[in-house]
Image (cartoon, rainbow, N blue to C red):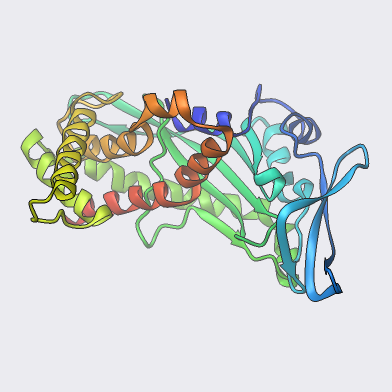
Length: 323
């Protein structure tokens, strides 16, 4: 399972060539939002507002659990995602998926910009890299409006958006009065994002040029797991024993993805990086597929695209570059 599958489970997968209006309608994002005074039993709460979701048919209801302040500016879905329409209409992109989390508190769109470059592997084969444009808009004030590029391998559509600190694949707009003007300029930032995206290709090619065997990757995998979850206790109680056994299983799984993940051959640091990316996305896959609710899929998709999953890929990239 890849991150497109994850996002499709959390939202709605598309045909690709929709207009913006069709995209918003098919993904359930054809609603507007409006701040309204929040009330307690004693009356209006000064400086606090609820956020109403107004459907295309005029039905209105507050988004559950959402309250914002006076300075919070709401960015409508139409405005936040309008630059996508220009790209799709010029055949520069196709829609992949879109949807919302927490009943519209956070909305997102995912579009494919096609192949950008190829990484040349040690065995002489090429690893094509495409760019996905991911946009997120938060109506609850929990996060900025974000437009970002995520590189994906064609062998496994597994996000490789670990970033070096000097590479910025995203534009963030704060929900403020100044941010309102920036929303109208989002389309102009795309060229800069693509230029920086291509710079990252140099880094990925360097990883593909560095040989790494199984024992070297196993040592790296142990270091990586320590960084993301802390040192395993040396105590002998049952809890510590369980933690050590889990660590060994994680190491074995990581080595498996390094050697046999989609497109991986276990030969280079590039295989190591992609192996970690696949492990982050695919671990506990059988349990997730059978047990997870829609809300859990939404949280997982958000983590892989914007949160801890992406941060751990960034960590893996920095560690491999600096080893």
